[in-house]
Length: 608
Image (tube, rainbow, N blue to C red; front, side, top):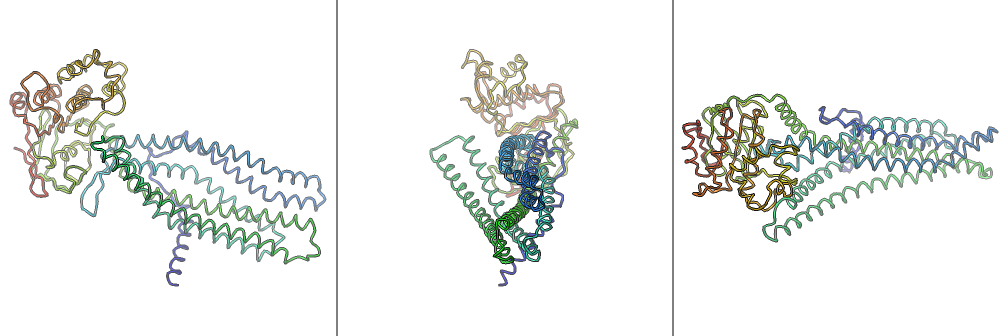
């Protein structure tokens, strides 16, 4: 009994929440999250059609009763015309429904494409930069890109639908209230002492049904998002991660199947509750209608029943049936509003972080502040990344580190000592609580081993779609990277080969690295102050005797090319022996040596 009372209180509270939330402000205010004008116009068109359909339904509900009143008043012709209009309602409503259905489908398809495009615009500036603080492990952790783009898409779709639909929901609710008031005022067949409580009871039942669905939605949404994120990760692996052994493919397909099964079970469980709730409301609606007939028949003299009596019953039933359906629609409007609001609230924290990073990056690009030097005060941070560490660690510097313009900083240390984390800190690829004088800027280029070209041709990727690229400049870069001759050995025309091939074509790891480096050097201009290279020669030998590519030669060329005017800072991390390269440039370049050492869970940075 106590549990029943507690659950009923929850239902009542949820009803109040549904009503209150309907009028509360929502969503993050940001220009990037505004609805595209095209989508807004299409959405308004769809909603106007839906509103017309509702108003037609409400208007036609009273036509039969009006027709009876006109005939009784001896306005036979006018009554017949109204009756004919009542009979024609089905044709009008079907015509509008077909038109509405077509416009809805078109809108949904274009709506999803626009949301996906806007999400892509945001993710391109926030990729690998969304850093969240995990209170459980007391560390920062980079959010997976699949999770980030899912958050953006969920949020945008819910926010835009809410913005478009909310004003029309308000109009629909007002029209439904007017209809109910009209039904009560025009009711002469049933005692108002019975009719009004009947309407109120059905309103309460509909709202309780909506509240029941609302209470179960949060659990459903959380599990559904977890499944969606996991599916995105697995599908991404299926598309991008090469199969090493047969078990890889079987394992991923099996994992995807399990995730889909969990998702299906979650959907089935939630919608079973939804269907039960709506079935209950439908049963109550049916009993109400039959109850009205019985109450009407009990209140009249049976000997006086004639065709007019049946007509009056029918007219009353049409109004009551429409009223009850509109009450159900009222609750459905609140349910749909709350569903969209749930998504918006759930993703709001993530979106606030994402949009802060997006706006910071956009601001950096617009400001484009010159980097004269990098000054890093002593710091200590906790950090976790999905990497070879796969565990939290502390990165610490006890002394101030200064890297001036024209310097080449070399980072030494074993794997997992924090070199990559440090380089991401310098280039603002990750935002951490740290004291630093690094300006927020876009004036850097960053290379790490995760970089690769996409699915366009190598030519398009190299020249960023430029229709008139400087082929002579690129060829010179490729020759100095010892890549031109390697490619030329496999084809008659290197440029034609590049236009026909993708990056995934059979190239060695070292060749792929040099292709990316050639792109970076080609696009290097006066707007770039910092060049950060994380293991850019790991696919090459340290040193070879023949005149071909090796780590020392490639790094020497990169430094000479990128820093010939002493206007840039170059930061290099490598596990390879590059002493010969450093000795050849010792009289031309000022080297800064930063050593990363492990001491338990703490990685210490020292300048030597």
